[in-house]
Length: 274
Image (cartoon, rainbow, N blue to C red; front, side):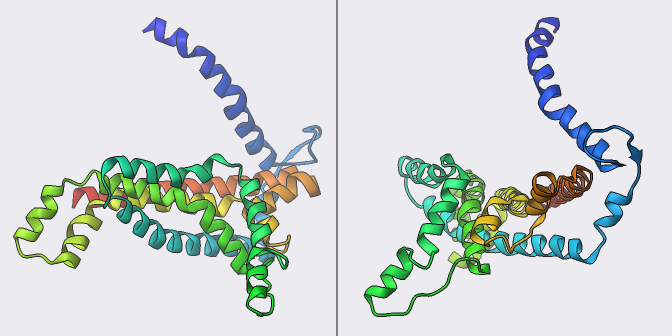
């Protein structure tokens, strides 16, 4: 046992330096005032009270709404893709999942700039419309552009866990359902979908939590007029320099993330008990 402790000691020290200490500093900043130097600080909860102002509540509301819309669309598209992939033999499935994950290897910033070149006034879509004599359409800096960026970025996080759950389903269960007189639709909802619920829950959780905390996509595709939680935190730390308020918002986002994780785990446990 002592040997294993010695082996993991460097990782524990590294985790302490890059995870625990920064988190403790964020907590400290969130409950203090007096600037970023941590001198002459005074403990206060005013940073959290400020989040209750209407302008910041609207940022929170819009972040949650966009997150839920992203989850809903990704769930429909992701389940269809995952289900279609499982219809192929195993070797082809591995190849198709690889194609789904390849975009994740590319930096989010680069993927977002690619969408700018597609959706801009002189982008690929408007050039294609021009070939047919159609007037250009403004896509950039709209809800549509932000949603396209979020969905394309989060879709793999929905497809992969759902595919894993469907792939693990024993084919004999589906055959048994057909033998007992269930049609294709009833078999899907009673067997396939019900047994893939753990993958759906994992996909929903990852997609929602990542979509409400992102800041690159709304900033670039929304033209700076979309202030979501991630953008607000970035703005407070980098532009405004108010680390105390930025830390308080970060704590609120962390609470939302943990609440989402606990809710999904509870839902998943109830499904397993059923």
